[in-house]
Every structure is written in structure tokens, then in C-alpha cells.
Image (cartoon, rainbow, N blue to C red):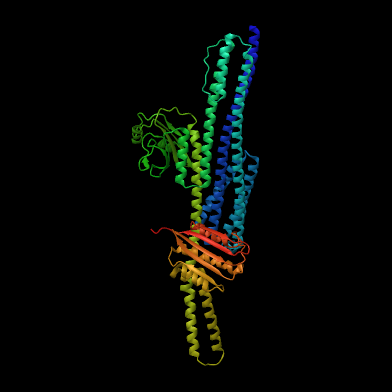
Length: 633
């Protein structure tokens, strides 16, 4: 009986061990899959950052080239040269990072080939021709070809980024499915173990009935989710082995569950921050959100993001929690002595301080007074430049895991991406504004030169010819006829020159503002146009932008709309100038490169504004521009 019991117990234990091992293996696989997903998520973030950097270089190349072609000013070639220098490394980096996904690698190579073709085959020869004063280099056809190429490259970038985001989502879904399967497998294995023990319970002697019942009860609690349950290891022989195996399994499952829960929370926090980065939320909102997510994830009493300043100080730009971190009341402090912010600034690597006892410096003394026991800092690196540091602090004794710095680094990479994106958008907006401002200033200079130069000389010529004709009186012959002909040509040239000057930058706009400029423009049209424009004056750049939007929109109405009437309105509402041009024509206008409206969109964007077009077929067209009015200094 005893040998049979031992044999049956051995068989049951073997089956039970196999079930537990299988459940544990599936759970470990899920944990490994979750970690792999985290690494893949990081890889996706690096790929997206590399794509964003390369796209920004292409835009720098295009804007620098466009600025030089439009103005001829060599200073616009500086960003163009920098972009050309950085392009090879950026292309290679994108292909290298995308190599883990064959489809993405193909897309990356398509992008790099298109960028290389644009830079070498179009941009460089075009700039070289412009430097030689080749007039064909500044023709609309050549500039339109450059825009078409850049648009095609940007569409390649859009498809690449969308595919990378789909990869990230698919990896995340697979990780969640693995986690659910692991929990189901573990619960099933435990339930099977309980059933096996119950079936063999009738064959066990009374000497082991109670231990078996106790084991069954404990296993039930484990299956119900109480992974902290432990059995007293009081049995001998096979029972003792069983008790020990249950306890080992419980400890392993508890540790695995805690690790899995932390990883899930970490991924959820990273997704929330990545969503904010993708939405391009304001910097203060993003940085506060990152501080809150990191602090909550690590259980820190306080978290802060600091930006390093050129004068050796640091400014707090995001914070979470009470006054426990390395921040001061006014958000700015020096970095003398021993603290993680100064260590990270000096080394450029993550740092931790397990105790501030005896640490020198005023900051360390202040932290001790606030009750800070330990802190960890991770650098924020933006485009290979140490921008700042993220600091997490604890006011109690805390045994920090070895991976704390790595977990913080995942968030600092997202912050760096957001900062780089914001810088790129700001640089692009500034570049557009500079191009528009230069063009407007060129128009003003040409208008002044025409008025003060050629127009004055032609006016003097007309007066002289009239005096000469008067001096000739009623004389007969060829001379009076020649003088009359010369006078007619001079007067016609004066009128044409005046119209040309008005088209470049109307004097009425400079003297009387937007309303006067629009009324002058409308007076020369053969189309009834209702005008409702505010008489308020605005900065010259804003007035010029609004005027040219109206002028181009009305030009489109006259050329394409087949309209019977049109209307122009411009109103100021809560610091925003709203300009509207509508007509009752055939509609069908589109905001693309063929209609001229895209240039108006760029003009509005250069003033931090927006432009929209509503043009249903047969329903007329409405062009609306909203332009923020700068605050007066």
C-alpha cells in the first residue's frame, strides 16, 4: 500500500509539476514578450525620431534654397549647407534603424533615394545655377518642380511614419494577448493541480489527508489570485516536497505578476506620453504630464524636469509632487556641490545618490532639510545636445532597482523628441516669416525706387514735352507730330508704371491701411465687390499679408470663378484679424499648387495664421484667413 501510494503520489506530483511548469513557462514567455515589446517600442521611437530629423533636414534644404532663389540673399544658404552636410548621416541612420522590419527598410531606402536625388540632382545644381545668375534657376517652372519633389518626399515620410505606428500598435496588441494567455494558462494549471490532488485524495492515508487538504486550500487561494499565500512546510517526504513546490510556485508567480503589472503600467504611461507628443501639446503641459507619469510609476515623492542654462544654472520646467525634489521656489537654482543634476550635467550620463548625508553644497543641505533621502537623474539629450535632466526623489528609505535609470530614459527620449519637433516647427515658421518679410521689404523698396526714380523722370519728361509742344504752337511739319507722339508714349508709360507700382505694394495700403488698399484694388476690377473692412491699422507685415490674400483671392475670382459678384470682409475679434473673400461663381477651387491658394496658405502660416477654402461645385467659393495680431510692445 505504501509503495503504491508513493508511486501514485509520484505520478500525481509529476503531472502536477508538468502543469505548473507549463503555466509558469507560458507566464515567463508573456513577460519576455512584454519586455520585447518594450524594446520594440523604444526602437519605433528611435525610428520615428530619425524620420522626423531627416524630414526636417529636407525642409531646411528646401526653405534655404527657396529663400535664396526668391531674394538672392546668401544668408539663406546657411541652413541649406548645414542640411546638405547632415543628410548623409541622417539617411544612413534611418535605414539602419528601420532594418529590423524589411518593409520599413524598403520604405526607408525609397526615402533616402528620393532625398539623395532631390539634394544632388535638383537642389545643388539649382543653387549653383542661381549663383551664376542663370535666370532659368528662378523660373516658376523650376521652383514648382522643387515643390513637387518635396511634396513627393513628404508623402514618402507620411507613409513611413504611418507604417511604423501600425507596427508599434500591432506589437502592443500582441503583448497584451500574451499576457492574457499566460494568466489563463497559469489559472488553468493551478485548477488542474487542485483537481488532480482531489482525485488522488481518497487513496491517501490519514497521515497525509490533512496536509493534502491544506495543500488543496492553498492552491485554491493561489488560483483565486492570492499569490502571497504560503503553505507551512511541516511535512516529510513527498508531502514536504509538495509543500515546498507550492511555495516556490507562489513566490515565482507573485514576482512575475508584480513585474508584469509594472511593465503594463510602464507601457500605459509611455503610450499616454507618446500620445501627448504626437498631439504636439504645449511644452509646459507635456513636461508636467511626464513628471506626473514618471513619479507615479516609480512611486517617487517628487519628480522634476530641469533645463540647463548657459550660465551654469538650471530651470525647473515641469514638476510633480511636493517640495522634495531638486527645485527651488522660483524654479531656478545653481548646481554647486553634490546633487544628481550637477552630476548629469558634468558627465552626460544617468546618476543616482542613495544618501545625501554628508554631501557638500547648499542644494544637498536644502534637500536634507526637506527630508530627501535619495534621488535619480536621467539626462534629456536633444539632437546630441544635453538639454536638461529628469530627477526623481524619495523622502523615505528606498532600495532603488538597477533599472530605474533605464525606465526614466524611455520617458526622456520622448521628451527629447517633443522638444526637437517643437524646435523644428518653430524654425520652419521663422524661416517662412523671414522669406515673406524679405519679399514684402523687396516690394516696398521696388515701389519706392519706381516712385522716386523712373516715375519721377517720366513725369518730368511729360512736363518737358508739353512745354515743347506749347513752344511749337501751330507750327507745321514733322517736329510737332513727333513731339505729340513722344508725349503720348510718355503719358502711357507713366500710367503703366503707376499701375505696376500699385500692384507691387499700393501706396494706398501704406498710407491708409488695409481698408484703403482693398478699396483701391476693388476700384480697378470690372466686377461688383462689396467691401466691409475695418479701418483699424495693423503692423505693416500683417496689413501686407491680408492685402495680398485679398488680391490673390479676387484674382482667382476674376480668372476662374465666372462670378457675377464678390464680397470682401475683414474684422478684428479678440486679437485675431479674420479676412474673408467670397463669390457666387462655379466653385471647385482647391487648396493645391495649381490654384495659387497654396501660396496664400504659406503666407498665413508665416504669420502664425490659418487659411481655409470652402468651394463646393456650383456653390461659389469662400476663402477665410485668420491672422493673430501681435501684441504692441
